[in-house]
Length: 568
Image 1 (cartoon, rainbow, N blue to C red):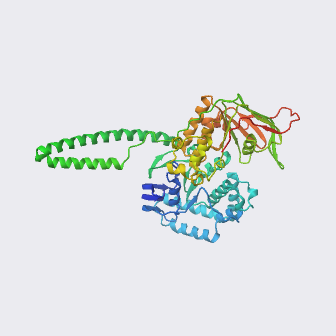
Image 2: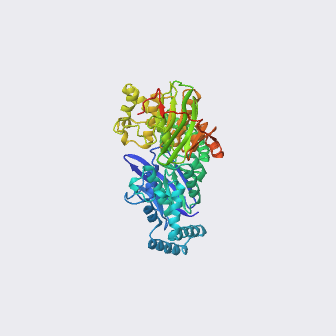
Image 3: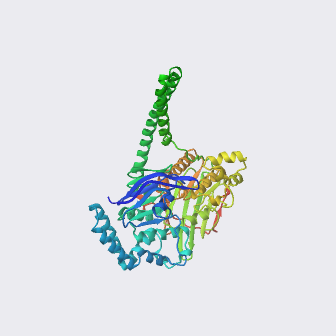
Protein backbone atom coordinates (compact mmCIF):
# COMPACT_ATOMS: atom_id res chain seq x y z
CA UNK A 1 0.00 0.00 0.00
CA UNK A 2 1.03 3.63 -0.52
CA UNK A 3 3.61 4.98 1.90
CA UNK A 4 2.21 8.01 3.76
CA UNK A 5 4.70 8.65 6.59
CA UNK A 6 8.28 7.44 7.02
CA UNK A 7 10.37 7.84 10.19
CA UNK A 8 14.10 7.10 10.14
CA UNK A 9 16.15 7.12 13.37
CA UNK A 10 13.98 9.84 14.93
CA UNK A 11 15.35 11.30 18.17
CA UNK A 12 13.47 13.40 20.70
CA UNK A 13 14.13 14.25 24.34
CA UNK A 14 11.96 16.17 26.78
CA UNK A 15 12.76 17.33 30.29
CA UNK A 16 16.04 15.44 30.31
CA UNK A 17 14.35 12.16 29.34
CA UNK A 18 14.88 10.39 26.03
CA UNK A 19 11.42 9.89 24.52
CA UNK A 20 12.57 8.56 21.13
CA UNK A 21 16.01 7.09 20.49
CA UNK A 22 16.37 6.03 16.88
CA UNK A 23 12.70 5.29 16.19
CA UNK A 24 12.23 3.89 12.69
CA UNK A 25 8.87 2.92 11.17
CA UNK A 26 6.46 3.44 8.27
CA UNK A 27 2.74 4.23 8.05
CA UNK A 28 0.94 3.17 4.88
CA UNK A 29 -2.53 3.59 3.47
CA UNK A 30 -4.82 0.97 4.98
CA UNK A 31 -2.84 0.74 8.21
CA UNK A 32 -4.93 0.55 11.35
CA UNK A 33 -2.29 1.07 14.00
CA UNK A 34 -2.62 0.87 17.76
CA UNK A 35 0.22 2.62 19.58
CA UNK A 36 0.72 1.08 23.00
CA UNK A 37 3.22 1.61 25.80
CA UNK A 38 3.43 2.40 29.48
CA UNK A 39 2.05 5.68 30.82
CA UNK A 40 4.73 8.31 30.31
CA UNK A 41 6.55 6.38 27.58
CA UNK A 42 5.97 9.19 25.04
CA UNK A 43 2.99 8.04 22.98
CA UNK A 44 1.30 11.46 22.89
CA UNK A 45 4.66 13.11 22.13
CA UNK A 46 5.11 10.80 19.14
CA UNK A 47 1.66 11.79 17.86
CA UNK A 48 2.56 15.48 18.22
CA UNK A 49 5.70 14.83 16.16
CA UNK A 50 3.68 13.07 13.46
CA UNK A 51 1.17 15.94 13.45
CA UNK A 52 3.94 18.52 13.00
CA UNK A 53 3.37 20.18 16.38
CA UNK A 54 6.89 19.18 17.43
CA UNK A 55 10.07 18.78 15.38
CA UNK A 56 12.43 15.80 15.66
CA UNK A 57 15.76 16.61 17.30
CA UNK A 58 17.46 13.97 15.19
CA UNK A 59 16.71 11.69 12.27
CA UNK A 60 14.08 12.31 9.61
CA UNK A 61 10.28 12.30 9.57
CA UNK A 62 8.86 12.49 6.04
CA UNK A 63 5.30 12.80 4.74
CA UNK A 64 4.36 11.73 1.21
CA UNK A 65 3.33 14.52 -1.16
CA UNK A 66 -0.12 15.89 -0.43
CA UNK A 67 -0.62 13.85 2.75
CA UNK A 68 -2.93 15.54 5.26
CA UNK A 69 -2.59 14.56 8.92
CA UNK A 70 -5.35 15.14 11.49
CA UNK A 71 -4.65 14.90 15.22
CA UNK A 72 -7.11 14.47 18.10
CA UNK A 73 -5.31 15.36 21.33
CA UNK A 74 -6.54 14.36 24.77
CA UNK A 75 -7.73 17.94 25.33
CA UNK A 76 -8.74 19.48 21.96
CA UNK A 77 -8.93 23.28 21.82
CA UNK A 78 -11.79 25.42 20.49
CA UNK A 79 -13.04 28.97 20.37
CA UNK A 80 -15.41 28.74 23.37
CA UNK A 81 -17.85 31.15 21.69
CA UNK A 82 -18.47 28.88 18.69
CA UNK A 83 -21.41 26.53 18.73
CA UNK A 84 -21.05 22.81 18.08
CA UNK A 85 -22.72 23.17 14.68
CA UNK A 86 -20.34 26.00 13.72
CA UNK A 87 -17.32 23.85 14.60
CA UNK A 88 -18.62 20.99 12.47
CA UNK A 89 -19.48 23.33 9.57
CA UNK A 90 -15.94 24.72 9.58
CA UNK A 91 -14.59 21.18 9.60
CA UNK A 92 -16.49 20.50 6.38
CA UNK A 93 -14.08 22.97 4.78
CA UNK A 94 -13.97 26.17 2.76
CA UNK A 95 -15.28 25.41 -0.77
CA UNK A 96 -12.51 27.37 -2.52
CA UNK A 97 -9.80 25.59 -0.54
CA UNK A 98 -11.43 22.22 -1.21
CA UNK A 99 -11.62 22.92 -4.93
CA UNK A 100 -7.92 23.81 -4.92
CA UNK A 101 -7.16 20.60 -3.06
CA UNK A 102 -9.16 18.60 -5.62
CA UNK A 103 -7.12 20.16 -8.46
CA UNK A 104 -3.87 19.32 -6.66
CA UNK A 105 -4.92 15.69 -6.32
CA UNK A 106 -5.99 15.54 -9.97
CA UNK A 107 -2.51 16.73 -10.96
CA UNK A 108 -0.91 14.11 -8.71
CA UNK A 109 -2.91 11.35 -10.41
CA UNK A 110 -0.85 11.84 -13.56
CA UNK A 111 2.38 11.54 -11.57
CA UNK A 112 1.47 8.44 -9.56
CA UNK A 113 4.33 5.95 -9.35
CA UNK A 114 2.10 2.88 -9.45
CA UNK A 115 -1.37 1.46 -9.00
CA UNK A 116 -1.22 1.61 -5.19
CA UNK A 117 -0.30 5.29 -5.16
CA UNK A 118 -2.91 6.06 -7.81
CA UNK A 119 -5.59 4.30 -5.75
CA UNK A 120 -4.62 6.27 -2.64
CA UNK A 121 -4.79 9.59 -4.53
CA UNK A 122 -8.16 8.69 -6.05
CA UNK A 123 -9.55 7.78 -2.60
CA UNK A 124 -8.36 11.12 -1.21
CA UNK A 125 -9.87 12.91 -4.23
CA UNK A 126 -13.23 11.20 -3.66
CA UNK A 127 -13.16 12.27 0.01
CA UNK A 128 -12.55 15.90 -1.02
CA UNK A 129 -15.42 15.80 -3.52
CA UNK A 130 -17.65 14.42 -0.77
CA UNK A 131 -16.71 17.35 1.46
CA UNK A 132 -17.46 19.77 -1.40
CA UNK A 133 -21.04 18.52 -1.34
CA UNK A 134 -22.34 21.01 1.22
CA UNK A 135 -25.53 19.10 1.96
CA UNK A 136 -23.56 15.89 2.27
CA UNK A 137 -21.11 17.53 4.65
CA UNK A 138 -23.88 18.84 6.89
CA UNK A 139 -25.61 15.48 6.94
CA UNK A 140 -22.33 13.72 7.61
CA UNK A 141 -21.60 16.08 10.51
CA UNK A 142 -24.97 15.22 12.03
CA UNK A 143 -24.41 11.52 11.45
CA UNK A 144 -20.98 11.68 13.09
CA UNK A 145 -22.24 13.54 16.16
CA UNK A 146 -25.18 11.17 16.54
CA UNK A 147 -23.01 8.11 15.97
CA UNK A 148 -20.62 9.20 18.71
CA UNK A 149 -23.51 9.76 21.10
CA UNK A 150 -23.61 13.57 21.14
CA UNK A 151 -27.23 14.85 21.06
CA UNK A 152 -27.54 16.73 17.78
CA UNK A 153 -30.24 18.97 19.26
CA UNK A 154 -27.55 20.46 21.52
CA UNK A 155 -25.62 21.65 18.49
CA UNK A 156 -26.44 25.32 19.12
CA UNK A 157 -24.72 25.29 22.51
CA UNK A 158 -21.44 27.23 22.77
CA UNK A 159 -18.41 25.00 23.16
CA UNK A 160 -17.47 26.82 26.36
CA UNK A 161 -20.50 25.35 28.14
CA UNK A 162 -19.59 21.74 27.40
CA UNK A 163 -17.89 19.33 29.79
CA UNK A 164 -14.41 18.02 29.08
CA UNK A 165 -15.83 14.74 27.80
CA UNK A 166 -18.31 16.52 25.52
CA UNK A 167 -15.54 18.69 24.08
CA UNK A 168 -13.56 15.54 23.35
CA UNK A 169 -16.55 14.14 21.42
CA UNK A 170 -16.90 17.34 19.39
CA UNK A 171 -13.16 17.34 18.69
CA UNK A 172 -13.41 13.77 17.46
CA UNK A 173 -16.44 14.59 15.30
CA UNK A 174 -14.64 17.61 13.83
CA UNK A 175 -11.67 15.48 12.84
CA UNK A 176 -13.77 12.69 11.34
CA UNK A 177 -15.70 15.21 9.21
CA UNK A 178 -12.40 16.72 7.97
CA UNK A 179 -11.37 13.28 6.65
CA UNK A 180 -7.57 13.71 6.62
CA UNK A 181 -5.41 11.03 5.00
CA UNK A 182 -3.88 10.05 8.35
CA UNK A 183 -5.96 10.10 11.52
CA UNK A 184 -4.06 10.30 14.81
CA UNK A 185 -6.49 9.62 17.66
CA UNK A 186 -5.25 9.98 21.25
CA UNK A 187 -7.67 8.13 23.56
CA UNK A 188 -10.70 8.76 21.30
CA UNK A 189 -12.91 6.24 23.10
CA UNK A 190 -12.57 7.40 26.72
CA UNK A 191 -15.91 9.23 26.77
CA UNK A 192 -17.87 6.97 24.43
CA UNK A 193 -20.61 4.59 25.48
CA UNK A 194 -20.85 1.13 23.90
CA UNK A 195 -22.87 2.35 20.91
CA UNK A 196 -20.37 5.16 20.31
CA UNK A 197 -17.46 2.74 20.50
CA UNK A 198 -19.08 0.40 17.98
CA UNK A 199 -19.76 3.32 15.64
CA UNK A 200 -16.15 4.53 15.90
CA UNK A 201 -14.84 1.01 15.30
CA UNK A 202 -16.77 0.87 12.02
CA UNK A 203 -15.54 4.33 10.99
CA UNK A 204 -11.91 3.43 11.70
CA UNK A 205 -12.15 0.20 9.71
CA UNK A 206 -13.69 2.03 6.71
CA UNK A 207 -11.49 5.17 6.65
CA UNK A 208 -9.90 5.76 3.23
CA UNK A 209 -6.40 6.46 4.55
CA UNK A 210 -4.47 5.34 7.63
CA UNK A 211 -5.48 5.48 11.28
CA UNK A 212 -3.23 5.41 14.33
CA UNK A 213 -4.85 5.17 17.76
CA UNK A 214 -3.63 5.43 21.33
CA UNK A 215 -6.11 3.42 23.38
CA UNK A 216 -6.19 1.27 26.50
CA UNK A 217 -9.39 -0.47 25.36
CA UNK A 218 -8.32 -3.98 24.39
CA UNK A 219 -11.69 -4.71 22.74
CA UNK A 220 -11.37 -1.59 20.59
CA UNK A 221 -7.82 -2.50 19.54
CA UNK A 222 -8.77 -6.10 18.79
CA UNK A 223 -11.67 -4.99 16.58
CA UNK A 224 -9.82 -2.31 14.61
CA UNK A 225 -6.04 -2.81 14.55
CA UNK A 226 -4.10 -4.69 11.89
CA UNK A 227 -0.74 -3.59 13.30
CA UNK A 228 0.57 -2.80 16.77
CA UNK A 229 3.36 -0.30 17.44
CA UNK A 230 4.86 -0.64 20.91
CA UNK A 231 6.85 2.32 22.23
CA UNK A 232 9.35 1.05 24.77
CA UNK A 233 12.63 2.59 25.91
CA UNK A 234 12.51 5.11 23.08
CA UNK A 235 12.13 2.63 20.24
CA UNK A 236 9.20 1.46 18.14
CA UNK A 237 8.67 -2.28 17.76
CA UNK A 238 6.08 -3.35 15.20
CA UNK A 239 3.80 -6.39 15.47
CA UNK A 240 1.34 -7.68 12.85
CA UNK A 241 -2.30 -8.22 13.81
CA UNK A 242 -4.46 -7.04 16.70
CA UNK A 243 -3.86 -6.89 20.45
CA UNK A 244 -4.42 -10.60 21.07
CA UNK A 245 -1.86 -11.43 18.36
CA UNK A 246 0.55 -8.87 19.85
CA UNK A 247 0.38 -10.49 23.31
CA UNK A 248 1.30 -13.89 21.86
CA UNK A 249 4.07 -12.57 19.59
CA UNK A 250 5.50 -10.27 22.27
CA UNK A 251 5.89 -13.16 24.70
CA UNK A 252 7.46 -15.32 22.01
CA UNK A 253 9.94 -12.58 21.03
CA UNK A 254 10.88 -11.96 24.66
CA UNK A 255 11.53 -15.64 25.26
CA UNK A 256 13.63 -15.93 22.09
CA UNK A 257 15.46 -12.74 23.00
CA UNK A 258 16.20 -14.01 26.51
CA UNK A 259 17.61 -17.26 25.09
CA UNK A 260 19.76 -15.34 22.58
CA UNK A 261 20.96 -12.99 25.32
CA UNK A 262 21.98 -15.95 27.47
CA UNK A 263 24.03 -17.38 24.56
CA UNK A 264 25.65 -13.98 23.91
CA UNK A 265 26.59 -13.55 27.57
CA UNK A 266 27.97 -17.08 27.64
CA UNK A 267 30.13 -16.30 24.59
CA UNK A 268 31.27 -13.05 26.22
CA UNK A 269 32.34 -14.92 29.35
CA UNK A 270 34.37 -17.29 27.15
CA UNK A 271 35.99 -14.32 25.39
CA UNK A 272 36.78 -12.72 28.72
CA UNK A 273 38.34 -15.92 30.06
CA UNK A 274 40.44 -16.30 26.88
CA UNK A 275 41.54 -12.66 27.03
CA UNK A 276 42.58 -13.02 30.68
CA UNK A 277 44.47 -16.24 29.90
CA UNK A 278 46.32 -14.68 26.94
CA UNK A 279 47.13 -11.57 28.98
CA UNK A 280 48.63 -13.79 31.69
CA UNK A 281 50.69 -15.70 29.10
CA UNK A 282 51.84 -12.42 27.51
CA UNK A 283 53.36 -11.36 30.83
CA UNK A 284 55.53 -14.49 30.69
CA UNK A 285 56.08 -14.61 26.91
CA UNK A 286 55.94 -11.41 24.79
CA UNK A 287 54.99 -13.36 21.65
CA UNK A 288 51.44 -13.64 23.08
CA UNK A 289 51.12 -9.86 23.50
CA UNK A 290 49.59 -9.21 20.07
CA UNK A 291 47.07 -12.04 20.42
CA UNK A 292 46.15 -10.82 23.91
CA UNK A 293 45.59 -7.27 22.63
CA UNK A 294 43.37 -8.53 19.78
CA UNK A 295 41.35 -10.63 22.19
CA UNK A 296 40.87 -7.69 24.57
CA UNK A 297 39.73 -5.52 21.65
CA UNK A 298 37.29 -8.20 20.53
CA UNK A 299 36.00 -8.51 24.10
CA UNK A 300 35.50 -4.73 24.34
CA UNK A 301 33.57 -4.70 21.05
CA UNK A 302 31.36 -7.54 22.23
CA UNK A 303 30.72 -5.75 25.54
CA UNK A 304 29.77 -2.55 23.70
CA UNK A 305 27.34 -4.54 21.55
CA UNK A 306 25.74 -6.08 24.64
CA UNK A 307 25.47 -2.69 26.35
CA UNK A 308 23.82 -1.08 23.31
CA UNK A 309 21.15 -3.81 23.21
CA UNK A 310 19.70 -4.14 26.73
CA UNK A 311 18.56 -7.56 27.84
CA UNK A 312 14.84 -8.21 27.25
CA UNK A 313 12.75 -7.86 30.39
CA UNK A 314 10.47 -10.89 30.62
CA UNK A 315 8.54 -9.57 33.62
CA UNK A 316 8.73 -5.76 33.76
CA UNK A 317 7.88 -4.07 37.05
CA UNK A 318 4.20 -3.27 37.45
CA UNK A 319 2.01 -1.69 40.12
CA UNK A 320 1.66 -3.96 43.15
CA UNK A 321 -2.06 -3.92 43.93
CA UNK A 322 -3.38 -6.03 46.80
CA UNK A 323 -6.63 -5.30 48.62
CA UNK A 324 -6.92 -6.10 52.32
CA UNK A 325 -10.48 -5.71 53.58
CA UNK A 326 -12.55 -7.39 56.26
CA UNK A 327 -15.70 -9.13 55.11
CA UNK A 328 -18.91 -7.12 55.45
CA UNK A 329 -22.61 -7.94 55.53
CA UNK A 330 -24.14 -10.68 53.39
CA UNK A 331 -26.71 -8.27 51.96
CA UNK A 332 -24.52 -5.38 50.84
CA UNK A 333 -27.08 -3.17 49.08
CA UNK A 334 -30.87 -3.32 49.26
CA UNK A 335 -32.86 -0.88 47.10
CA UNK A 336 -36.65 -0.97 47.13
CA UNK A 337 -38.91 0.97 44.74
CA UNK A 338 -36.01 3.33 43.99
CA UNK A 339 -37.01 6.05 41.51
CA UNK A 340 -35.50 9.24 40.14
CA UNK A 341 -36.48 11.92 37.62
CA UNK A 342 -35.15 15.30 36.56
CA UNK A 343 -37.88 17.69 35.40
CA UNK A 344 -39.73 15.79 32.65
CA UNK A 345 -37.03 13.14 32.17
CA UNK A 346 -37.35 9.81 33.98
CA UNK A 347 -33.90 8.55 35.00
CA UNK A 348 -35.21 5.25 36.33
CA UNK A 349 -38.68 3.97 37.07
CA UNK A 350 -39.21 2.37 40.51
CA UNK A 351 -37.08 -0.77 40.79
CA UNK A 352 -35.78 -3.20 43.40
CA UNK A 353 -32.13 -4.22 43.47
CA UNK A 354 -30.12 -6.42 45.81
CA UNK A 355 -26.35 -6.85 45.72
CA UNK A 356 -24.86 -9.61 47.87
CA UNK A 357 -21.43 -10.16 49.34
CA UNK A 358 -18.83 -11.33 46.81
CA UNK A 359 -20.67 -10.10 43.73
CA UNK A 360 -18.90 -8.13 41.00
CA UNK A 361 -21.55 -6.08 39.22
CA UNK A 362 -21.01 -3.95 36.12
CA UNK A 363 -23.34 -0.95 35.81
CA UNK A 364 -23.79 -0.06 32.14
CA UNK A 365 -25.92 2.16 29.96
CA UNK A 366 -25.70 4.94 27.41
CA UNK A 367 -24.17 8.26 28.41
CA UNK A 368 -26.79 10.14 30.42
CA UNK A 369 -28.74 7.01 31.36
CA UNK A 370 -28.37 7.63 35.12
CA UNK A 371 -25.33 5.60 36.17
CA UNK A 372 -23.65 8.53 37.94
CA UNK A 373 -26.97 9.52 39.52
CA UNK A 374 -27.34 6.03 41.01
CA UNK A 375 -23.79 6.24 42.38
CA UNK A 376 -24.61 9.62 43.95
CA UNK A 377 -27.69 8.11 45.61
CA UNK A 378 -25.65 5.17 46.95
CA UNK A 379 -23.06 7.59 48.35
CA UNK A 380 -25.73 9.76 49.98
CA UNK A 381 -25.01 12.80 47.81
CA UNK A 382 -28.49 12.80 46.30
CA UNK A 383 -31.93 11.65 47.43
CA UNK A 384 -34.16 9.46 45.26
CA UNK A 385 -37.64 10.71 44.41
CA UNK A 386 -39.10 7.55 45.88
CA UNK A 387 -38.11 4.31 47.55
CA UNK A 388 -35.33 3.37 49.93
CA UNK A 389 -31.70 2.31 49.65
CA UNK A 390 -29.85 0.66 52.52
CA UNK A 391 -26.33 -0.63 52.92
CA UNK A 392 -25.49 -3.55 55.19
CA UNK A 393 -24.49 -2.74 58.79
CA UNK A 394 -20.82 -3.67 58.36
CA UNK A 395 -20.34 -2.29 54.85
CA UNK A 396 -17.34 0.02 54.38
CA UNK A 397 -17.81 2.03 51.20
CA UNK A 398 -14.85 3.00 49.00
CA UNK A 399 -15.21 5.22 45.94
CA UNK A 400 -13.03 5.62 42.85
CA UNK A 401 -13.96 8.85 41.02
CA UNK A 402 -13.73 9.07 37.24
CA UNK A 403 -12.82 12.77 37.31
CA UNK A 404 -10.45 12.18 40.27
CA UNK A 405 -12.18 14.93 42.28
CA UNK A 406 -11.67 12.95 45.50
CA UNK A 407 -7.99 13.93 45.40
CA UNK A 408 -6.82 17.34 46.68
CA UNK A 409 -4.71 18.82 43.83
CA UNK A 410 -2.77 21.01 46.27
CA UNK A 411 -1.78 18.07 48.47
CA UNK A 412 1.03 15.58 47.77
CA UNK A 413 0.78 11.80 47.42
CA UNK A 414 2.87 11.48 50.59
CA UNK A 415 0.48 13.69 52.58
CA UNK A 416 -2.56 11.94 51.09
CA UNK A 417 -1.66 8.38 52.07
CA UNK A 418 -0.48 9.44 55.55
CA UNK A 419 -3.78 11.28 56.06
CA UNK A 420 -5.77 8.17 55.13
CA UNK A 421 -3.67 5.90 57.32
CA UNK A 422 -1.09 7.27 59.78
CA UNK A 423 2.36 5.84 58.99
CA UNK A 424 5.99 6.87 59.07
CA UNK A 425 7.52 8.71 56.13
CA UNK A 426 9.64 5.66 55.35
CA UNK A 427 6.57 3.41 55.33
CA UNK A 428 4.75 5.86 53.04
CA UNK A 429 7.71 5.87 50.65
CA UNK A 430 7.68 2.07 50.53
CA UNK A 431 3.93 1.98 50.00
CA UNK A 432 3.89 4.57 47.20
CA UNK A 433 6.85 2.87 45.55
CA UNK A 434 4.56 -0.12 44.98
CA UNK A 435 2.49 2.17 42.75
CA UNK A 436 5.53 3.28 40.72
CA UNK A 437 5.90 6.74 42.27
CA UNK A 438 9.37 8.28 42.33
CA UNK A 439 10.51 10.31 45.34
CA UNK A 440 9.89 13.53 43.38
CA UNK A 441 6.36 12.36 42.49
CA UNK A 442 5.63 11.58 46.14
CA UNK A 443 6.57 15.08 47.27
CA UNK A 444 5.07 17.04 44.35
CA UNK A 445 1.54 18.45 44.13
CA UNK A 446 -1.13 16.00 42.97
CA UNK A 447 -2.30 18.63 40.49
CA UNK A 448 1.00 18.23 38.65
CA UNK A 449 0.67 14.46 38.22
CA UNK A 450 -0.45 12.78 35.02
CA UNK A 451 -3.89 11.20 34.75
CA UNK A 452 -2.33 7.75 35.07
CA UNK A 453 -0.43 8.71 38.22
CA UNK A 454 -3.58 10.14 39.82
CA UNK A 455 -5.43 6.94 38.91
CA UNK A 456 -2.75 4.84 40.64
CA UNK A 457 -2.96 7.12 43.69
CA UNK A 458 -6.74 6.66 43.89
CA UNK A 459 -6.25 2.88 43.86
CA UNK A 460 -3.65 3.20 46.63
CA UNK A 461 -6.09 5.26 48.74
CA UNK A 462 -8.86 2.68 48.22
CA UNK A 463 -6.60 -0.05 49.52
CA UNK A 464 -5.58 1.96 52.60
CA UNK A 465 -9.25 2.65 53.41
CA UNK A 466 -9.91 -1.08 53.75
CA UNK A 467 -13.25 -0.72 51.97
CA UNK A 468 -15.25 -3.92 51.45
CA UNK A 469 -17.77 -2.41 48.99
CA UNK A 470 -16.01 -0.78 46.05
CA UNK A 471 -17.83 1.78 43.90
CA UNK A 472 -15.63 2.21 40.84
CA UNK A 473 -16.44 4.89 38.26
CA UNK A 474 -14.46 4.16 35.06
CA UNK A 475 -11.43 2.81 36.97
CA UNK A 476 -9.46 1.87 33.83
CA UNK A 477 -9.73 5.15 31.89
CA UNK A 478 -6.30 6.57 32.74
CA UNK A 479 -4.34 3.37 33.26
CA UNK A 480 -2.05 1.72 30.73
CA UNK A 481 -2.92 -1.83 29.73
CA UNK A 482 -0.45 -3.63 32.06
CA UNK A 483 -1.79 -1.61 35.02
CA UNK A 484 -5.38 -2.44 34.04
CA UNK A 485 -4.50 -6.13 33.96
CA UNK A 486 -2.86 -5.89 37.40
CA UNK A 487 -5.97 -4.15 38.75
CA UNK A 488 -8.15 -6.91 37.30
CA UNK A 489 -6.03 -9.57 39.01
CA UNK A 490 -6.23 -7.71 42.33
CA UNK A 491 -10.01 -7.31 42.10
CA UNK A 492 -10.46 -11.00 41.29
CA UNK A 493 -8.38 -11.87 44.37
CA UNK A 494 -10.44 -9.40 46.46
CA UNK A 495 -13.60 -11.21 45.34
CA UNK A 496 -12.30 -14.80 45.38
CA UNK A 497 -10.83 -14.41 48.88
CA UNK A 498 -14.20 -13.23 50.20
CA UNK A 499 -12.98 -9.74 51.13
CA UNK A 500 -15.80 -7.80 49.56
CA UNK A 501 -18.08 -6.68 46.75
CA UNK A 502 -17.77 -4.43 43.70
CA UNK A 503 -20.11 -2.23 41.67
CA UNK A 504 -18.38 -0.64 38.67
CA UNK A 505 -19.40 1.84 36.01
CA UNK A 506 -17.24 1.00 33.02
CA UNK A 507 -17.17 1.18 29.24
CA UNK A 508 -14.08 -1.05 29.20
CA UNK A 509 -15.56 -4.19 27.71
CA UNK A 510 -12.52 -6.37 28.42
CA UNK A 511 -12.57 -5.24 32.08
CA UNK A 512 -16.28 -6.07 32.41
CA UNK A 513 -15.66 -9.52 30.92
CA UNK A 514 -12.61 -10.21 33.08
CA UNK A 515 -14.04 -9.18 36.46
CA UNK A 516 -17.84 -8.95 36.44
CA UNK A 517 -20.22 -11.87 36.83
CA UNK A 518 -23.35 -9.74 36.57
CA UNK A 519 -24.39 -6.74 34.49
CA UNK A 520 -27.09 -4.23 35.46
CA UNK A 521 -28.20 -2.00 32.57
CA UNK A 522 -29.96 1.37 32.78
CA UNK A 523 -31.90 1.97 29.57
CA UNK A 524 -34.47 4.75 29.12
CA UNK A 525 -35.76 4.46 32.67
CA UNK A 526 -35.74 0.66 32.72
CA UNK A 527 -33.31 -1.43 34.77
CA UNK A 528 -32.36 -4.87 33.48
CA UNK A 529 -30.30 -7.62 35.10
CA UNK A 530 -27.96 -10.00 33.20
CA UNK A 531 -26.31 -12.99 34.98
CA UNK A 532 -22.96 -12.84 33.18
CA UNK A 533 -20.10 -10.64 32.00
CA UNK A 534 -20.03 -8.24 29.09
CA UNK A 535 -20.00 -10.89 26.36
CA UNK A 536 -23.15 -12.45 27.83
CA UNK A 537 -24.79 -9.04 28.09
CA UNK A 538 -23.88 -8.10 24.51
CA UNK A 539 -25.20 -11.39 23.13
CA UNK A 540 -28.46 -11.14 25.10
CA UNK A 541 -29.06 -7.40 25.25
CA UNK A 542 -32.72 -6.52 25.68
CA UNK A 543 -33.61 -9.88 27.21
CA UNK A 544 -32.32 -9.33 30.75
CA UNK A 545 -34.70 -9.61 33.68
CA UNK A 546 -36.60 -6.34 34.07
CA UNK A 547 -36.12 -5.08 37.63
CA UNK A 548 -39.34 -3.51 38.79
CA UNK A 549 -40.63 -2.60 42.21
CA UNK A 550 -43.05 -4.68 44.19
CA UNK A 551 -46.35 -2.84 44.72
CA UNK A 552 -45.08 0.32 46.43
CA UNK A 553 -46.04 1.16 49.96
CA UNK A 554 -46.16 4.66 51.35
CA UNK A 555 -42.46 5.21 51.97
CA UNK A 556 -40.42 8.33 52.50
CA UNK A 557 -37.39 8.53 50.17
CA UNK A 558 -34.32 7.67 52.22
CA UNK A 559 -30.76 6.57 51.81
CA UNK A 560 -29.58 4.74 54.90
CA UNK A 561 -25.81 4.37 55.05
CA UNK A 562 -23.83 2.56 57.69
CA UNK A 563 -20.13 1.92 57.99
CA UNK A 564 -19.34 4.26 55.11
CA UNK A 565 -15.59 4.68 54.66
CA UNK A 566 -14.50 8.27 54.15
CA UNK A 567 -13.63 8.97 50.50
CA UNK A 568 -10.83 11.37 49.87
